[in-house]
Length: 343
Image (cartoon, rainbow, N blue to C red; front, side, top):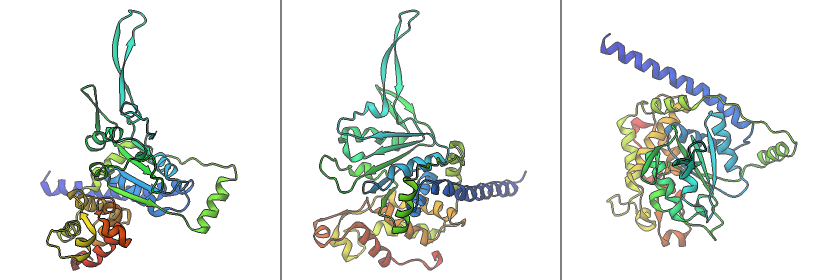
């Protein structure tokens, strides 16, 4: 078989998988909407995170169905789900698991046995992650970066695919511990969930007070999700578009020769290289979900806020002037030229 025929066969398989993914998307959204009303943008962003193979932080006020959203999408994708309620007294072993002494009742021999913690699942919901001390928060760092945990010097591989979806409440600051920048940078998105429209809220009230509850049915499974992750990375992207993603990321960094006055005035530290990587990867996933097989600058712009908002560290000038990271990103998109070939 010639190299060209192998290439054609490979491209055909990729296109077939992408078409299957687009069909699955409609089925998954149908299942999710049976439980989650409104919040379509948040659902799409969570879906993108799962396709890219990243982790996400979900920020929202109490009672906006953050936990239900994660659980519903995990069920629709056929993924195993575990929830960890983060509290001030939570210990790292409560997340990773620990070794215990187990006795054989027939021989009386005692031996160490590892008991896995709730982190051993496809989707781990870290509920109110900022309520636990940094020592416990750091127990997730190895899991998020390496896909493994180390207990008493022994490393254990986590289930694949593996995702951490963490929630935090933006208004209750008493008794909370801000996430360190190193951990924030490991979250692909910071998804902000806001209040829904009046009509959607009415639908929620009617649906949740009728006594009827509908559980989502699995549409796919963990093996297919892992396959989709590999296929997403093969989506082509023009150099002009990937360069645009890099230019957006570099423009957030003050004292970097970008000559953007609002960056120099309001930003202490810009985004890391991970932001540019995630812009490209997430852009590929968004393009596929939109029915396209190439990435546009519009994909990069649409995902700039959830990818960059938790990576841009503003200073006291921004706080005093009421300038948020979202406002800085909006100005950034207006200021950085868009390549004509990426339109």
